[in-house]
Image 1: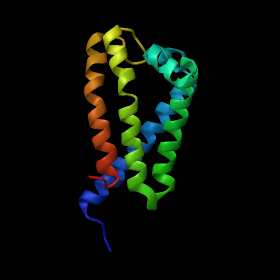
Image 2: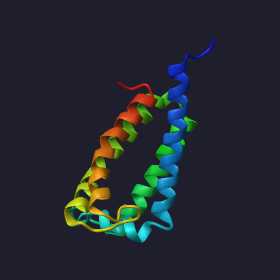
Image 3: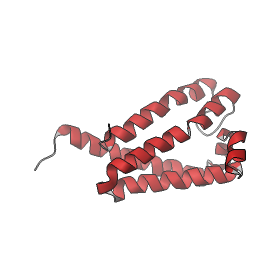
Image 4: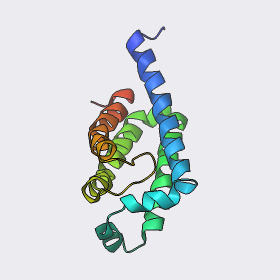
Length: 135
């Protein structure tokens, strides 16, 4: 049975999303680790009872695992897509914090870039849901 063009596009979108997640996760654990701490609001450290570095490391590990799960578990694709969408929603407060405080982080050095990043979150959520068949 051949796949239609929409399913082929969804498949490409899933692989790109998986690659984006893994690359972002690796950056959280390596070159961007220090800079990403700026994005973590102080209230998050109090709520989670940990420090900013641990939140950055945990989010990086989560991104890597979600990206890997997207490829490794095709039968669970809709659930993985929902988890990715929830993750993108969970990090939105950090993006808002960074925009409101005007602090630079890797690849977000201007107010315009930080503001534009806010509008990327809903697109990432939609990408995760659409590419995994969730509606």
